[in-house]
Image 1 (cartoon, helix red, strand yellow):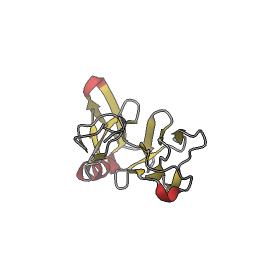
Image 2: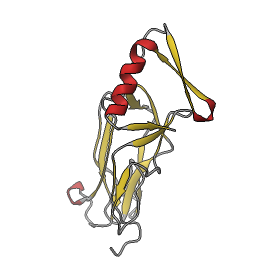
Image 3: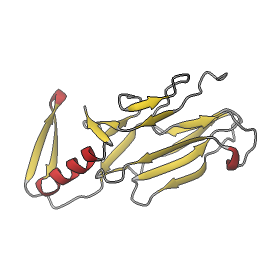
Image 4: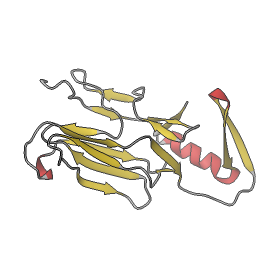
Length: 166
């Protein structure tokens, strides 16, 4: 590789900061990276492959998949394309209606894309507030969840290996 920012990272799980309800994008505990490149933060992509403006030549791509976790990205989360030329843009940007899937192709002329700010998440299902259970986590953070869905939601998320707790 002759470009210092080149790399490939595949995440099996992502870490969730429960106090902020934010995905920790630069925690590589559950990720595998190309040994000859850089580690790429979760939800980011880019390339320096093509000078063309069309999306067909983009090699950088990302996919955020929170299906079956009980979580979705907040509607306020957006991505930005940055790089050269200043008109570089994301291509094939897709976001599911329920906010559990987001993907895009990014790059060209050494461009990239990344989330603007923190990658905040929220529960996909809200139920009537009856019968709460408090889960205590390190740093004295407490999370209150509905007792009817708590076990199911956490079991699904842990079984899918898509989140872990800090």
